[in-house]
Amino acid sequence: MPLHAQAAERGGLAARLARRAAHWSPTTRGLLWTIAAGLLFSLLNALMRALALAVDPMQSQFLRYAFGLAVLLPLVFWRGPRHYWPKSVAGQFWRGGFHAAGLVLWFLALPRIPLADMTAIGFTTPLFIMIGARVFFAEPMHWERWLATVLGFAGVLVVVGPRLGLGGGGAQLWHLVMLASAPLFAGSFLLTKALTRHETAGVIVVWQAITVTLFSIPLALPNWGPLTALQWAGFLACGLLGSSGHYCVNRALAAADISATQSAKFLDLIWAAFFGWIFFADVPTETTLVGGTVIAAATLWVARREGRRREDGGD
Image (cartoon, rainbow, N blue to C red):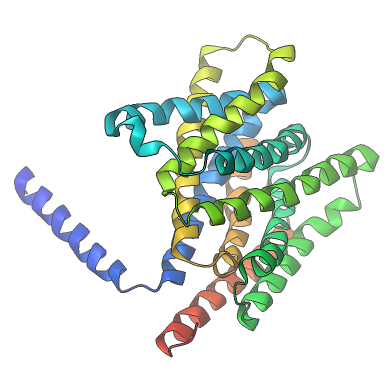
């Protein structure tokens, strides 16, 4: 097929997909953006864990966001810095502070616990987010959302429960450190939701990179070490993945209620198990497979229920 014909066919396909997506409900779009973000972040986490095994955690945190900022700067200068100046600089720094604090705990635990465990423990964040969304934003909490979250969390317990009882005090300590990051990340997501009312997704992503980089500099310098060329390339890839993932998150938050999209995050466990097998030869256990099945079923079920609710004229 000639090149111009192929281009026309691709353009026609893109147009058809765009028309189809225009009829999707806000909840469906939010869920799809959330799933895309989870896939990107799971790949990012696997790559970051590989890097953090050899690089100081605080140096890894700084480089992850410094490179995330670096890959965004060409876009900022192309469109003009004024386009990315926030309406609330203070709000951006508050959001960055919460996220940086959660990242400190996350990066400390990252090289010390399995990738699937790390992801599963992170699933406690939606519980804090849903409570905060109800308290601060008065978002409606349909019974389907609560049930999907409870079922998803039950799937997480199937995966993580046996592991929390094994491995000695040290392993459990780092599991608790990872768990302690969850409410901080929840605070970051809630502030992001508030910011999406008057900021674009691009502005929020750029200023997250700026603020977390600034907060991370004093933590990284004391234990700074040299890097290989491959490690520099790895952090560049992390910057690309992270900025893309946060853009998807912000699009999801702008499209739908927080509580409507959090159930899709439980699919992250499936991505984590896959990338853990690819990168670290971690074979998923029976509990991982059972828990993942429960999580996937809950996610698909709530997506269908939300779609029907919109068709029936519900909230």
